[in-house]
Image: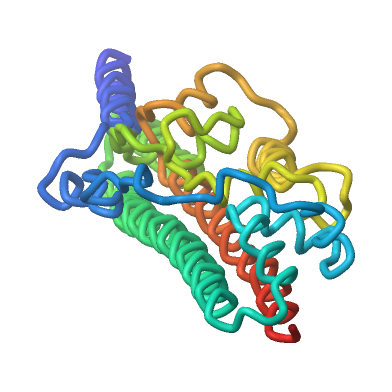
Length: 307
């Protein structure tokens, strides 16, 4: 019985050591946890000029020539006054050309803003996916090793019980080996896996979750469109709210606790591989929504080319 207790104690120690979920630290982890995707400079919009005064009958001019959707786009990107002037002037060719250039420049700038933000989201999605895959590979190797150890231990236990003639010793080895093998097998069914410490200084998901762009991570034009109900297919919720609701329902099963909220939408923390996969999926979903704003620009651009 004493030997059985010793074997059982060893089994428990082995299981506890094997099941410990450690936070990984390495140069590879450090490289991927460093956000190399964020802009290296602060964009200066202070010199970006918008027309300060409405032209006479501006609203009626826009409503006569543009759809409600295109008017909202023009307001979001700061074009409504230039557009009204352009549509009002018929004979002054030079002034029309100047206004057309201003309108075109602003459309190009907005398109660049959309693509720049989408590129940052895409880069972060790839970065987080690489982290998740790196941890998955380590966890898979661990599971494989546990499986091999369990099978090997089971085989050795069987051989030992056959070769040892002492019934008492044979029983001890058989029971202890069986328990150890079962413990290792259990670890392969539900491994805790490794984790990483991911700190977030610039969290683009957080702006959407809290509906707060006070840090100006999103250009004003994009943020305005994301918060306008007319740009969603349903017209009931704006894009920001729709994205948040999808995350809540499909990534968090309709529930959110303070710890998870901090992990995903504040300054980060300890992530499992599954957490990282979820974060990458959310970044990719947000990226797709941002890229879809090009469709709204296209609608306005097509209309402008008809005048």
